[in-house]
Amino acid sequence: MQFIRSLYFTQYLFYGLTTAVGLFLLAFVFPALLLLVKVAFGVFVVLALLDMLALFSQSKGVFARRSMAEKLSNGSYNDILIYLENKYAFPIQAEIIDELPFQFQKRDNLFKARVESGYTQVIHYTLRPTKRGSYRFGAINVFVNGPLKLVKKRYRFAQDQEVPVYPSFLQMQQYELLAITNRLHEMGVKKIRRIGHSAEFEQIRPYVAGDDQRTINWKASARKSELMVNSFQDEKSQQVYCMIDKGRVMQMPFEGLTLLDYAINASLVLSNIALRKQDKAGILTFSEMISNIVPAERKATQLNRIMEVLYNQKTRFLESDYELLYAALRNKVKQRSLLLLFTNFETLNGAKRQLPYLRKIAKHHLLLVVFFENTELQALLQQSTDSTEEVYVKAIAEKFDYEKKQIVKELRQHGIQSILTSPRHLTVNTINKYLEFKSRGMA
Image (cartoon, rainbow, N blue to C red):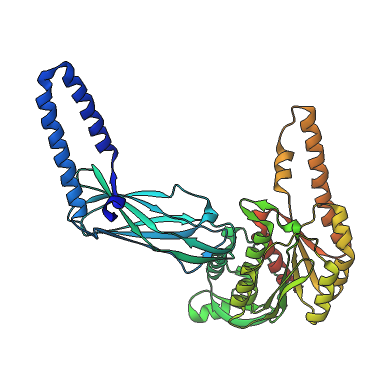
């Protein structure tokens, strides 16, 4: 039974059988061909049996395994590796089907490979999950052609794997690496000009590309025979909280991810940068109730705590309670802090309803409200109009776009900092604002 389940016929075998049937029919018209057809058919059957014998004479002719990280990064392209080892005495042509988690809704994950005898082939592909949570991979199916490519043998490696998908730690590591090498500008992070040198002097160190030339210490450079610069450090131990709205306004999708996921990914990156700046990072999530509060700290385990909390966040489909948010901040956050509120306002009236509570929060903390451009509206605004209906649609889009800009103006009039950004540029714009606050001594 196992033999039958693992035996498959190739298209070449079907072509041969179809040709044989055609020749037999032709032999009824030309009887002289019958003997030749019988001989050819017999040779074909023998070749098929030899091909089958070569494949099935060895019970474990190939071996395959999947390799990936212990956790995947949401919204990023994650590397998946399949190692295929050929234990046959001849080269093989193989088709590999990897059973992906149902969340990807992908059934054509097929790869083809040629592997020499005794060698291992590495198949590499990437996956981009768009939801946090648990993902289960199924078996690896390998279909191996015989030397004559007439039959196939199926190998099934039951490598069921369950892997969690966390907020985008790959994006966080990418920003961290660029920060270490002074190449953050490649991601769009601006070089913020420090206003004066109110920051504390830290050390004299060697010059590296990207350093401000005005900080060169010429006396130290002359002594060392290389360029040396004065290094300054920002004020430390400031509290930075990322507050994430989980209400229904954050369910809107963009490029597969919800606005909530974009806010979560940006919060993880910003928390890591704040910790590297020697600040204290914390998280608060809320909707119609306060869901989670991670007090701002600077411990070595703080980033892992933040990641574990962000991993479990889900959108709640009720309107968020900003009065409750204000009460929680007054009760839990006693020290003046930088608060980054990730939310979304689609209308000016919606923002005005929450404005009294935002003004109260801004009295005690430095508040930055981060909300999103409607990218679909931007696409409509750039289209030409050819009909009356399109004119009306574009007019409505312009109204909503205007209201977004009015929200920024309204917040500014009440002394509240804000960012209106597309989801794609959320992380960069948030980092730029944070660094701007640090350079001005506001944070």
